[in-house]
Image (cartoon, rainbow, N blue to C red):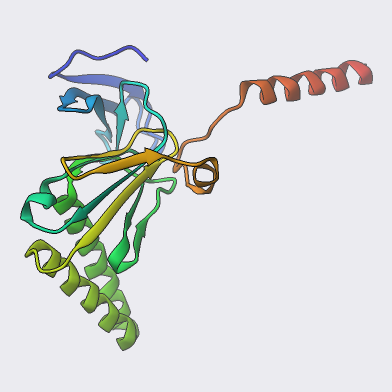
Length: 219
């Protein structure tokens, strides 16, 4: 990948929109900047000028190994711990049992722990409304308990252990209290890659050779 100029938003034309079929309406806005004590990252947002389709991702422009990052949030200062989450990053909030796994439509972002809490809160509020319409009072009560816990975390009354894992090494937590370690092979295999697919060149080449041999034999 060629590195983009730092500090400038670059616009790249991608062609037709896969959602609405707009001709030449798809573009990418790419922004490269450096995060202190971490390195350069590129934030990329794909937008369709016709239908408004949008998808974002974050890519680290330096080789980094697959790691597990952990921070225990205990006060207001900890809420500002930096969060770099790519499309292949999994986030866990231990005390409330929340796990955010990347799917086919996952988005990347650069934020902080408080921003992650707000994203979770908004999702829980939508889930609460849905459960309330269904008459599931037990689920509504559970969501209310989690929402209250998150509010207590924001006020420094309760702790919250935040983890982020990325088999591609494109996600991280950054801050004084952050601890990290390499992911085990078992952990890497258990994590979702989101919309990404890992290609094994040797395996693909072997399969291609076998297919060619079969065609030659048939001839």
